Length: 145
Image (cartoon, rainbow, N blue to C red; front, top):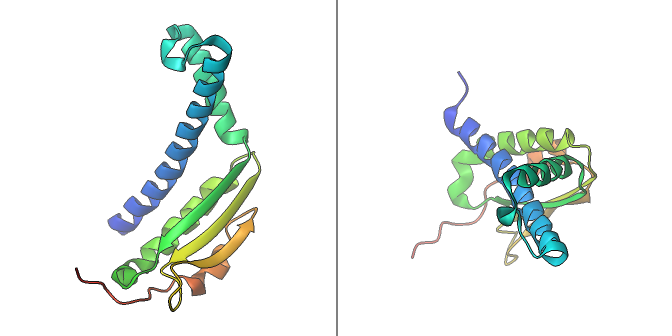
């Protein structure tokens, strides 16, 4: 039986990426509709709204996507690193099935020393999961308030 928290985090990462893409596209479509027709999708009759949402769904798979994945690698994540690795693998797989172009970068926080972030992977057309293995290491002390 798979580790339930790992499966939950992986599913959450995929869902958040999907929802963020969908919300961004809906905002763009609503802006365009407003400028052309003076209406948003909510103002359209159901049949027209359905056609617009079909276009949005198609765009989700085809539109060029630039994505930055930010990974919390603080000391509090030490026991969760295997789960994070699995979530990144699953996210990578879900991005590979898209037909649109992709640029993805990965950063972690905190960075080394005084750096607030660390660039793990510059923009690339895929997540390099193999090279992330050594980079996904919890660091830094726990801060107490």
